[in-house]
Length: 366
Image (cartoon, rainbow, N blue to C red; front, side, top):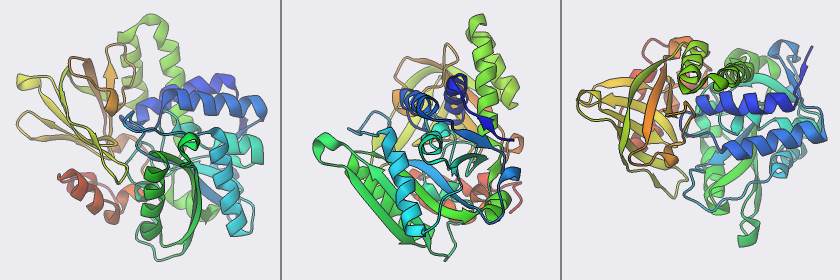
């Protein structure tokens, strides 16, 4: 049986999702608003993939953009609902349930409000356990598929007349950049519903249990918080199987917003033998040591925690801030077909100017 999500689950989803946000994944307050709205006006239901019929339509609820505090964005809860409605209209069939493209500060809760309003299920599966910069990385292996898919988006800064609705159909790799451009034109952050696929396909290609993992991690954090920062960090490491890769003060943050709606740059943490360089494209994608040796690479979980053990977005890392770098090896998390697809890496490598695929795909079965 499914699990009715309650107000107590909202904070757990935000806390756990914030760790898997890996420096991106939306806004904490946006996540709280989405979740609180959903459990107040309806009864969103979390269901395991085993409960989903093979022929049911499952779509991905996702926010697109780079809301790192560098743009004038506006996102309302109703935008997530509208995006689902647009896809259902184009598909000519009801959406049975929604997965999310990634966990995050708000994205873990992207499917809750449509569930409360429209009755779609919150499916316990994700396109990627951790947050990532491109839609293709959470597309369940559809990035190089020639199949025509439907993608819709809704949202934007109303005061600036930047509200946009659009529905596009085409191969995933061709239409995903259209939604990202719409996000930029709308103010930098837009709600989407995309890639409706049959339940049987989702069961085979998604990272199963991704939302319940975020909830369990959040519950562990909440239980540890009364005991202080060290207890929180220990709880995160224990719950994820991760470790602290480095600690120190932020020395430099070169993050900048691009017209492709990405935040790109590097964050230098610590000095001397403990120096770490975090490569950012919306999220923390790789970590090098002071000699340039690679220590961690997507799809590993890479998260910056402040002195209190709270995850910090890449755009909020300021010079002089004391931080810890959490690293969870990809062998410890469920991986979707998306992150095993070589086609998703060239655009990211080009934008960042570093190698990702050779590390990301090493030891990962295709």
